[in-house]
Length: 147
Image (cartoon, rainbow, N blue to C red):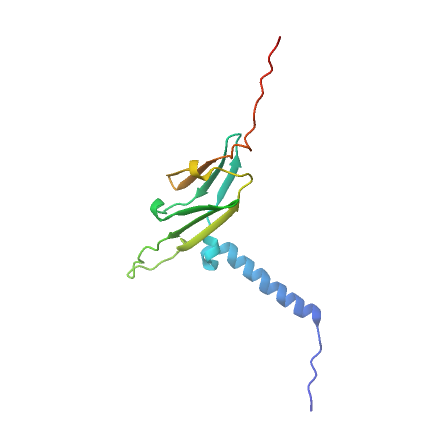
């Protein structure tokens, strides 16, 4: 004899919803458990003044010598690697959220810049790139003479 199973789409939908709720709860309560290479991308601020485009990237624990910064067209790319510390095999970790591995972050620049005059400084885990705007982009002031 065949057993028939009644189709209950509402129950199936609620089951899927419960699974998604659980996934999001885990992401919030245990942020390190969902770590991926994309989660290593540094947070950045990008702004411009009358003279330059400035990028500040949050890169704590990164050796500045391990950073590679390039500009191709209107795209700035910051690449590097966060090296892993050796884990203490004798210890029992209760929380292990720090991430390591290679990262790459590309940003579109709002205006053309002079890359040959760019400066990069690294202090307290923050990389500051200052790139002067191209000459044709800078605002020009014209003084008015009186007669």
